[in-house]
Each structure stands twice: as C-alpha cells, then as structure tokens.
Image (cartoon, rainbow, N blue to C red; front, side):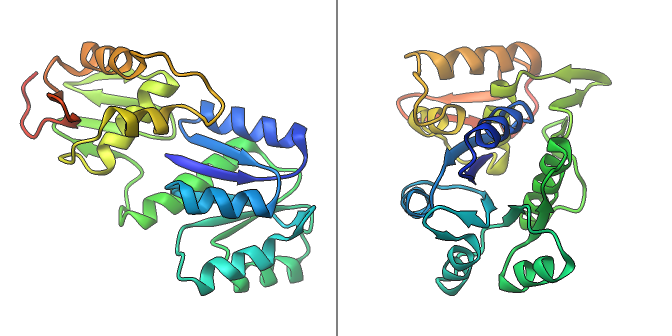
Length: 222
C-alpha cells in the first residue's frame, strides 16, 4: 500500500522508508510541507505519516488543511511532542493516530495496518480471496493447508490486486505501487513478480488481460 512519509530528519526519514518497505508498504518520502502538498495532489497515497515540526510550517496546519478540503485519508502524527495536551490537540485536529518519538517501527507498521483495515471496513486482520488467506503483518498466506511466504515486492503487488480483486491493474499502475519515485524500474519487473506469485499461488490465480494489465481470477483454477 502506498504511504507518504513527511519528515525532515534525513536519518529517520531513511529508516522509516526502508522499514515500512520491509513491512510490505510502498512508501514515498518528502522533507517539507510544500513537497507533501505536491505529492498528495499527484499520487494516490493510502495514508500519511506526518511529522509536526517541519522547516516550512506545522504539520498540524497541514493536517487541518487536508481535513477542511475533505481529505479523509488516515494520518498518523509522528512527533517528539508527546505530552497529553499535544496528543489531544493532534487528534482533535483530525489525526487518526499519534506516535511519539522515539517509537518502535513494528508498532508504527501495525498502527498503519489497523487504520487501513478499518478504512476498508474489515474487522479481521487477514484478507481472503479465492482460497487464499493473506496475513499483512507477516507478509505470508495460507492456501490448501500450506503456508506461503512472500518477498516484500511480491506482497506489495499481491496486496494491491487484493484491494479490488476483479479490477484490472495496468503495468504502469503496478510499477508505481512497487517502486519509489527515484528507483530505477527494469522493463520486465512486473512480469517477474507476477511470475513468482503464480509459482506460489497457481498459474491462473492472477489473470493477464492482454494489452491492459492484470487482475485476480474469480474462480479457483489452481
């Protein structure tokens, strides 16, 4: 799932980007509110991890602007300002969660998964489709009684298809979900990951719609 991180500390920003990618997200990172506004206008992020103290303004003001504009995407405030009054202000401004620094990266990933799960109307942490049960917290699945492990980008591609299983996803759209703005994409990257997923889930679990893209099969074809 595509996540925007807004943080001006370069070390923390890099750690968040790498850590959330390893947890199955597709994160993009910016270091200012101006860049965050541009990113939000030009990309379909599912959630935002937002620092409060940024070089060109307050993350709270940015959050308030998003909410006034009707943007309901989940926002997690990430800040050293962790007194009770600060948390109350952040939540009342429109934040969906509030994480104080220092923090545990695994906990942050779990909080993001919970917010996204609720946004999708799911009560269960697992996702089920066509005999496959997927567990986002471990990037694993179960099918026919066996456990399946996914690499980070395999899982990111599968999770994106699972968001709307019968919708056709173009190659370009899948590339955007798998790779960051500054990452070089090999010409056959999507095909390689689809091939690996088919080897684990069955040759017809993911359908190719010739000339258009990919989608999940509606019936179990093994």
